[in-house]
Image (cartoon, rainbow, N blue to C red; front, top):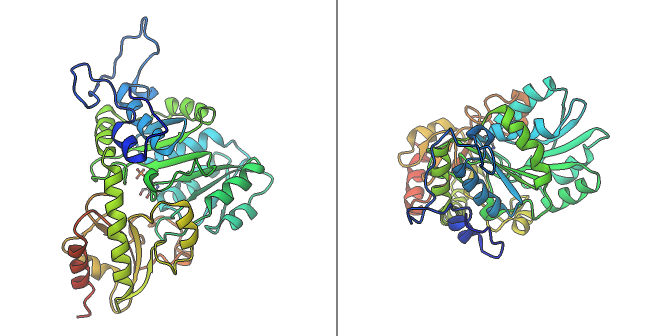
Length: 382
Ligand SMILES: Cc1ncc(COP(=O)(O)O)c(C=O)c1O
């Protein structure tokens, strides 16, 4: 396996880190599809559910190198990763402080499953001071995204990590929107970083996977529970994800460049009431995002003006696909109201501005002029 040399840049790590030696002389990691491994005289007992087969380990090593973390562990989905991390680190009686406006599936998991485990949930605005102020005697961890899904709110990661650390509160960050190319929360003091690898890490809308990176000490209970939970990733997906990660940096840079152009163009359209994009100077999180992110990402929120509705725009688009999920090379658009946030309580959804006028655009790597032309025809007033 290639060394995870910390002096390499992230584009180099994306290509090389974790690659398995190929006995046939090929340059790629071979696929080991086995679910049964000889164990007598072996260094360890390998089994896919233990998440220690060669392809699972190779892709975990690549993501850990990209996030500058000591260890990585792969899961069958992003939500399996979130669930396992929380159950491994929180006990009955503990409180989890959660940022408002995160991915609806995580929000739903916290609302339904955590109370059953005796873990209470306290929600606070997606802001470092608000989240820290919400921490009480029983707070064990803060869970957040930055940028958040779908409104792209930005939280000061350095501030929250430093102050939470002083109080002995873990900071768990879902870094799916930013990707390790744009933001490394571990470097800013985060304890545990989670990815839905289904999104940018996979990048081609053809796999589902999750990843966790953190220190060896924090990983130990996560790994132990993962073996029991059984939400492991298969070897074929690991291989496909490893291949996809090689182009992560080039994809993300192109997505950022396209998103920046689109954000500025969308802002100038009469039919658009508001654009959420941290790269715009007037975005409330612009300054903090400039400090903690290398670029502003490929996700945009846009609010259309009546009589247009989000659905009408979606139905008119011809190049940009109306689809759930995000982070692919193809641009996709969805209404969070009907998709990612459908299971969030209506009142909290409304407070977050998730309604029939809000669209979430995941910008792909196409020619930006083609994306602009497609949006222009879909936003027409007649
Ligand atoms: C920010 C974020 N985190 C986590 C998840 C869950 O990931 P998965 O669908 O891979 O379980 C998603 C899915 O959309 C997401 O957008």
